[in-house]
Amino acid sequence: MRLSSLAVAAALAAALPAAATAQVTDAQTAPPAPNPDEGGDRVTIGIGAASVPDYEGADSNDIVPAAVAIGTLGGYDFFTRGTQLYVDLVRDPAGPGTKFELGPVAAVRFQRNDVDNIDNAQVRALGKIDVAYELGASVGVSRTGVITSDFDTLSARVGFVHDLSDAHGSYVVSPQINYTTPLSYSTLVSLGASADYVGKGFGRTYFGVTPAGSAASGLRTYGVTDSGWKNYSLSVFALQSLTGDLRRGLAVGGGVLYSRYLGKYKRSPLVRDIGDPSTWSLAAGLTYTF
Image 1 (cartoon, one colour):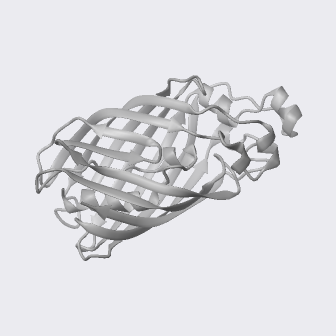
Image 2: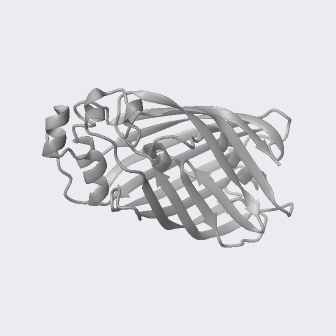
């Protein structure tokens, strides 16, 4: 697996929360799909902890466990992104150059499902939302050997998922862009940007307040009647090998994610009245590549 792909996979594995709330799942920019230079299967796993908002647009954070896996098995690339699983069904040639990606995405969204862990009593009073089971696809392109060396990678993809369980009965479209560069065989940095465009059912479920919800919580009634851009996010991650080579062995990584909510979603009472349109997430952990 080429150094840039493997290292950013490890960096994100150290920083992405597996049990985090859905806003972090949607916001993170996923790594470029790995590509085997050395042949054979290879997997990176990571565990750690993350501080993430209690819900989308919350002004308080919760500590959650972090876990991610990424690799190549049987010639097919895969990676997890929070509670999403991406699989790339395109087998591209190894080495520097342009790579293409196309494959399925499966996701589980836990947004406001465990209200006992939400600090704000008014949000707890709105009640829990059922877990959403989502399925979709992603398409993307990446270029290895862009600026600094044959190993830096610029990638762009668009992911689409739709709720199959009627929890929100809608969809999320997530354009993502990521730049990753190794500073050496033992150090890597990654910069990312992403955004989410959501359907009206998503906005109504996670940002709306019904009359019954208003009576229970004291929040003002609020409706979302159409689709729109929910938020954008910016991220930076760094990874340092503890064994001298990011392509194998143990490493430590960490990162920070900034998200800004937009338009009708920013005006929701869950954000404007008791939350914050700007949220921050922090994460750190260990990875192992074998």
